[in-house]
Amino acid sequence: MQHRIVKKQYNSKLCFICGLKNGSGLQASFYETEGGELIATFTPSDEHQSYPGRLHGGIASAILDETIGRAILVGREEEIWGITIDLSLSYKKPIPLGVELKVVGRITEENSRFFHGTGEIVLPGGEVAVTGKGKYLKAPLDKIADFDRDAQEWAVVASERDPEIIDI
Ligand SMILES: CCCCCCCCCCCCCCCC(=O)SCCNC(=O)CCNC(=O)[C@H](O)C(C)(C)COP(=O)(O)OP(=O)(O)OC[C@H]1O[C@@H](n2cnc3c(N)ncnc32)[C@H](O)[C@@H]1OP(=O)(O)O
Image (cartoon, rainbow, N blue to C red):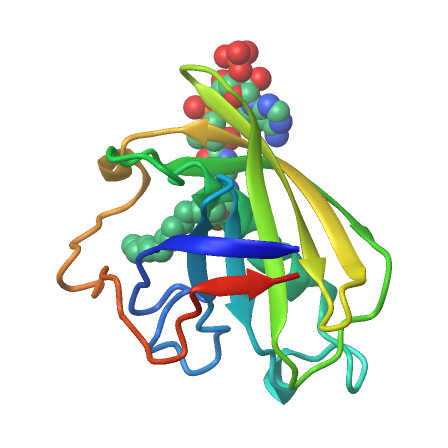
């Protein structure tokens, strides 16, 4: 299925998932789709392995967590921040290293205090490797972290690799 991309989301400096200067991290990119979902793209390296050649399950959990947690921002002008309070996953296929993976996230339920979402990590051939669902407590950013946007390099960083369409 083809997903038309309508917006790229912010990256940060040091977040393990989206920090562009975290040399050990995934340096993932996040794209909002016309259909109201969020798609993350990333390419895991040898540092992210569990058994040789296989992505660590904790890292798979982390990218799903952030993709679902960021899906609350899709299509909104205002920022809503979430703190993960419950996350469960089902690991269905091993995830290889050194290939680009896609992670899809969406919001399934929301009220004034919480939001819930689901997501999946998709292999290059289109098979779903991991599914997840999470519950997040909404909170103002200044209650979550001491966050200086400039110091954290919180910005949309355009790349020539940014796609207009993602095929999954
Ligand atoms: C700086 C640069 C950054 C840039 C980069 C960022 C990138 C953009 C990221 C965006 C994407 C985010 C995705 C990653 C987000 C994390 O990684 S967050 C980190 C992981 N999570 C945590 O550290 C949370 C740890 N837990 C806590 O701090 C505390 O439990 C909390 C969440 C503050 C709540 O504690 P509390 O205030 O004492 O509240 P409590 O009364 O226990 O619970 C409040 C309500 O939540 C419910 N609840 C609490 N825990 C649970 C649970 N486990 N299950 C179900 N319900 C629960 C309670 O039932 C209660 O509901 P009500 O009965 O009131 O209706």
